[in-house]
Amino acid sequence: MLGQPLRGLGPTSLSDMGIPELGDPILDLLVPVPPKGKDRPRTTKSGHVYTAAKTASTEQSIRSEWAVQGEIQLPTGVPLWVHILAAFDRPKAHYAVDGSLKQRYADMQWVTKAPDGDNILKLATDSLNKYAWDDDRAFSCSIVVKSWSDRSYPYILIRAGVLNV
Image 1 (cartoon, rainbow, N blue to C red):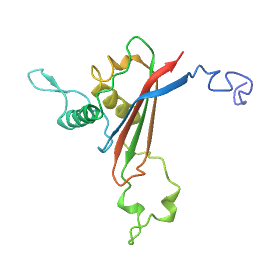
Image 2: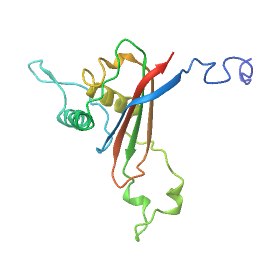
Image 3: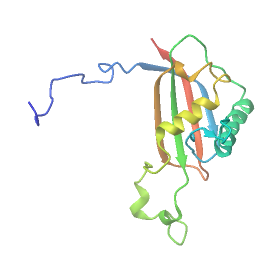
Image 4: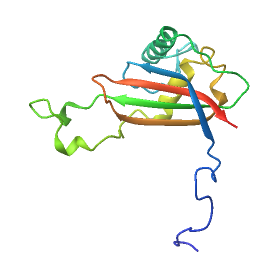
């Protein structure tokens, strides 16, 4: 059995794997900030724990944009889903002198550089705890996508809703 394909063993579709159908998004929030991962908490010599300034600033930007867009809140006591699109600025090396995208980068859509997707998810969901949702532990389905921006600026897109159960 070792080294042999596992055909016929296990689920063959997303629904067989228990991946739920998502409901329509309730929250659709585009935040024009460069994607950032949540930094680890910092501790002073006296033992005081605090959030790093760059993380706190990004969390505040997300909350501010949420407020501008109507302070939408998701229901409590139900399983939720969240999708995060972290759209990064392309590096200058991807562009020719005339400003056009170099051919060898034209089909490159996905970003594999830091920050890690789990840290982007943590920053985005923590920033809206007690605001858009009661607690991020209600998210039963989470997806993070890191790609090059399709706009002239970097951004984080946060979509969330209730799972169809």
